[in-house]
Length: 271
Image (cartoon, rainbow, N blue to C red; front, side):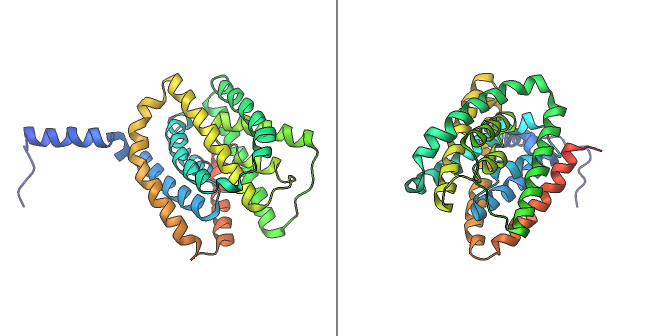
């Protein structure tokens, strides 16, 4: 085998590297960003299988290796592709009354407030709050999975308050799902309407956040990463729909919640 010592790159080698750099940012080949690609695959496979978790899973696992503010302008636009497709596919099941009168007004205001709070709280506080939210969400879902406790009917004021809180968490870290699911636990929505309505909520709010990221200058630098990860999202959707008919969904959800529980604990109480 010829020795590489003293090798001098040719002009053609330099052109090849430059061409690769225009297709995929070099930083995506580093370990943290490669791991984020794996987490995105897991997250979107789970979303396609079970109907939840694309950003929550990718962000909670990704936060172990990357800062939240670096991932949000990547993960939020990626979610628009899936939520937009699923919103159109299941548009007949959307509960427009619940969406327009109950959910979107409070969630939108909360999202803008949460986005505005991020710089005031600081990265470490936001990361700990996010970890605490994930621990609560995963522990609660595991408890419900094993005990099958029925949802309780709540007052409209209670529901609105928690929807507003869900909007704040969505503005902080694009993860309003845990609190919104909790807020709507006592609302009379069947499974199909519940899922379709929430998917459209994420499409609307993540579109709003994407516009905000464009205005604050964080979206444009993230677009090459979004483009690089988009094929992974598509693979996750196809793989998830295939596994939906092959794997025990309840058991798979429990495994995901256990992983989130430990990831959330690591974020909330860093060593």
